[in-house]
Length: 404
Image 1 (cartoon, rainbow, N blue to C red):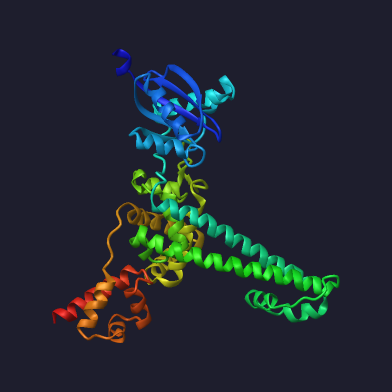
Image 2 (cartoon, rainbow, N blue to C red):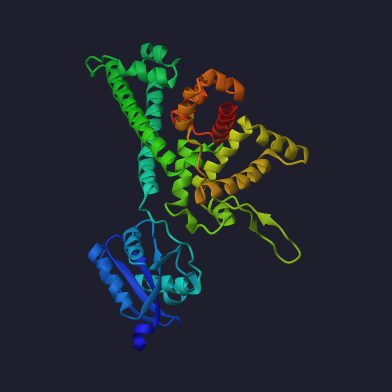
């Protein structure tokens, strides 16, 4: 009975074919270590083994997004709290050397002392689909870029009659023209070059078709996952996908907006010592999320009047463009965190379209009244555009017209 009431903490060092687990008690005493397979049945056996030592309250796992993803899901379904261990304790590694059992023990101790407190992503909902589809999309995009560069390089060294025709063209024009080439005997250098260019051009077209299909799917999924995020200024399909993947299916695991800013690498880090109080740039965190915030900032600096006014004011204060961009990224991180953790519903634009038609109001009348064009209103009504400000302005104007 005493053993059943004992509180224990687990730690797991994950690998492709084997997971090594350790169990410690509340005082940090090591109780046992053992190795388990990486099948679902082995995950269950690992869980039962840990629970045999007492009440299992927490498990620290290395690599929850890689080799430990399956075990993390299994423990989560069983109601066990799982925390992500980023790296082993280096002091323990220096004292005891490097082994899987030592790393598992270090993971358990990190979970016990609170050093490991990051809740892992669940990986079970729509965001996981967005993540894997974006992997395929970026792979196709990178491959298409390489193919375009190979076409350019072949044209540079091509015979003069081919180079004279293809060199002045843009990439899109080159691909279209090369895809229609009719090579003859490849033994001749000109014909061999034509065959190579045609092969690469058709590969470029196939990759473009893949990207278009994946982008269309990602467009629908990101809008379904978080329409409020998609409606934010400067947030398109790719940026929304990056930010959703960075936050995960369970964004409320991120405690506050400061933690999200740190995760994105836009929070200043304290670098003070003695009498000197200073901060330095954060070059860590999720660099893709950091890049996504930068892209939002660049779009707003070009298109958003409020952001332009802010940049002008900060410039007058003596801030450089890079410093202004850093400040903007921090503000944007705060806004994005609200969208991710507490998304607000958008006006139902399809219902607004029905009401507009019933009231006999044309698209051009709406567009002229709220200062936009009819195409933007039409796209908004059909769900092809996500713009919170435009949607709310449209709703307010239409409701006022109907009430009058």
